[in-house]
Length: 289
Image 1 (cartoon, helix red, strand yellow):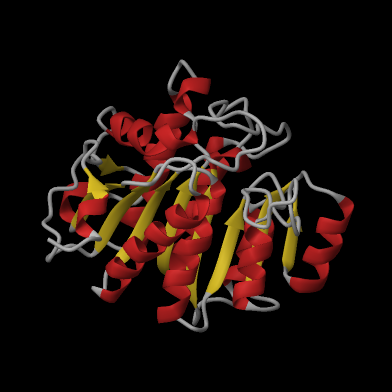
Image 2 (cartoon, rainbow, N blue to C red):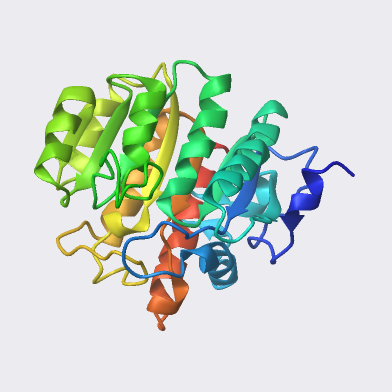
């Protein structure tokens, strides 16, 4: 057993993921990290919460007329991260996702805070140099530093733009951030404020020949629908709009995805976990069937 393989732990599996690793097309990876969150903690329990909620879902999607059990999906479990050690945790996440990509499989990473997207995107971009990132969020996440820290869930997309270069990131649903963040976004990326569906439909026409990574922060959805997140921001999209956005992306070559910032203990009804689990199901059946 390699050192990397000792860094995985089983915390249950996403329902209907019955394939073995060798046969899998999609590999689910848990990244239970929430060390740099700026308000309420608890997203390290997101992967477990999403998996648990998946057992309340049907495997059949009436939206796309497909069954989840017909897709070869393997849930690799959660990466074991050294609590509080940001640098080493990001390194472990990078190695875990890189292993999946090198094995010619698609990583679907369950967070965890949004900072986990940085090593995931880095690993995927090394395999797909022309990678484009679609960023669904309430917040810009474009600060250069946050309380003196360069690597934070408030700076993660700034680091992604620095990694990929100008014009490689498209933002949707953004409705919160500092003025300088919006100015930076307008200069270095494609900022689609407030809404999702209309600008996404326009952008898809220009992205069909590019490898695409999707990073979906659950707080893109209004807290009336998904209260279980650490930085809720009113004025967001509905859960129905989120599902429609996921289905629109079926026209693209999605080579990786993460779903982040689900904090189960902040939503005692469990609707946030359930919405996240359904987003996972719909993405898998839309992109990799």
